[in-house]
Length: 252
Image (cartoon, rainbow, N blue to C red):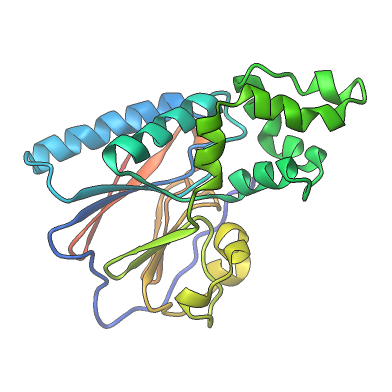
């Protein structure tokens, strides 16, 4: 995936704020890089311990794309699934999770998912794409994945929401369609949109925090914040910290 150019946005007269007394750590696209996720979580914990010893009202929000391209999708899913269940992490869906589920449900050709990093995801679950593609057994791939993936992982993927709102911030994977009310955004746009959103200088009503389009550094603009720093290519997994009207960045 190419790296997007930075774009300027129009200024806003009043600052966007996270709900008083809360702090949000929003984490960009992991893409199977469990090594980076583990390191970033350690740095988040260090930040929490140093600045908030009571650890009250801190919330982790993951922006989707846990799987594909990196080699440890299984480990990533297990980590975020366990965090969602045990620590209340908010885990959103990305377009890569959507592609896998669409292929499993017969709505997308397997070749499309495999060409977009699915080969590495299969490998993390002990499957070789070549065993199916080279021998004409593509019809067996879905059942093989269902058998190889723990039921808890599939249930996690199928249960992921497309967005969450906290204070003056709206979190989703890809972005929103300008001119459409946030409550009327389509799941497809929330997971897939790019240029029409990235090029927009509009105030969307809330500040949009998203991933999906890699940048070399987190992109912090008046109307949106892009947290995707292309972890699978750059070895940099990033997180923005939102508290009151302040934005900080930590990364691997």
